[in-house]
Length: 236
Image (cartoon, rainbow, N blue to C red):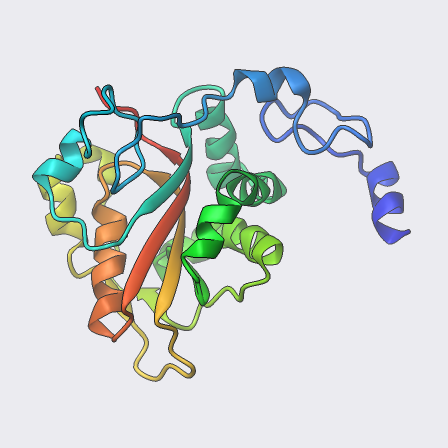
């Protein structure tokens, strides 16, 4: 009853175009859903990015760089209109969009994620300074939505960001790796340490952030790290 009243007083809006939705139309309008570019096969066996040929197992980035996580599960290709929606979530305070993205990860990859036997979901953390200025972590909002769908706890007591780094888009791939190498650490005292975890982020670009988070987790004794993201950069 409370949810229905909330929808009447504050009608839901499409998570992509932000237009008002009817109460029975879900979280995106049909035209926007048709416009979204889902990652399709063939996909890189490591990061999950689309690749040109089924004969290639890995994308160029994963062939050139070490990837310590087991496997990745990105849902969309990072391009408009999805990229605009993610920017609104990240910088425009449209926190309600995160529910759609968490649910889409589950819809697309639910069966595969269940087979991974994930014990905990870990959102890629923000530096405290950035968290203070933005007021929320978009990766955490997506993780909470996904955790609700999967029935798995979201853990913010495992991984932390200790280094405030310059915007990654200003750096080359090599510089990104170096910039993030020691940016993430685990907390000193962690209760009920899981052995298999799923990292959650909004966008996977070069993989530097996920790799840095993976290494920090594995140094603490976590045995297997998977990742999922709403979107992944398109190969050029």
